[in-house]
Image 1: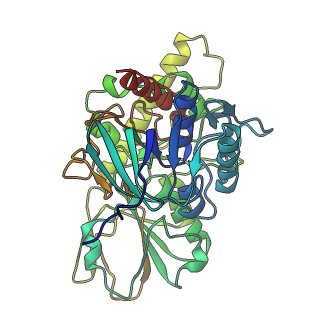
Image 2: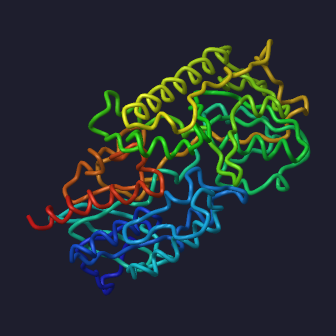
Length: 418
């Protein structure tokens, strides 16, 4: 029989926070400011995912002025630029030091179980008993790879954004990028610039200009309240939480990156990857409808911004404009034989799933999604942070952690008070 040795002392804690990214750090500060001393556990180092599971050229999609957490805001001289990952991890390291976060690094959580009015945690550094637990490990732990990947021939090199770093690691030959959120577009552009032929399989996406009416699009979305829309205000929350990340790129020149940009560069567009059979990739014929819907939704959003600008006396800020419809190939590719050597690599830019394999509490549905109401998990004394549209549309952004952590800290403090 295996298990924890009887002479291993169980530590008692009031609150354990799992994950020391922006959400876990923000929650730690908010609890400490309320007189609650948490224990903050991190499987690696502070901002571990940002440091080890992102590609080299990545920059934030949000401008620097939006890099703010409870007790610390960006103070550099480039507020309208976009942080490279190295700058962001430096910012988070400084934040951890600034708030004197009680972090225990290199501490993996292997099991969380409920009982006796609290939770028992098994960790790589020993067991802990806590009255409350905050799941701040995020929703981007495992690449979401479609089932059809099993039909890809063995000679095709397959990567995800978690293990892709730069084009130099890829074999020579063409690349099929699957997925057209921000990640899919950015990697398509970067890989094409390395001299490889890139085919981009286009699924549902959110088209968005980088700048609109002389301001960054985030300026408008922040000011108009679009980013503050709450989870309890939307008609279809499941749908809202499944919306892809917007097609944006953070660049010093504030440029727009969309399907038209990629087409002009020579990236080949095709429909959504539907299946792979006998080594042949088959694509949906719905490319035109998919792109038309994305164009329509973008224009609706711009109409909302224009209406807010008019209502708030901002008609003199820039000039309203509408952008050219997405240009499509006249005869989109429907099949691509992966056995013929044209494609050497597939990049699965198809999103992420959270990993709750260590959570031995019945709060995860059959699709692996955490059951919660605005971050209050369906188990007493358990909370979540860092998930898409957790409490607000901005929840998964850096600055979204601030308001969500403050809300969760208030709720948790009330729970502890009884």
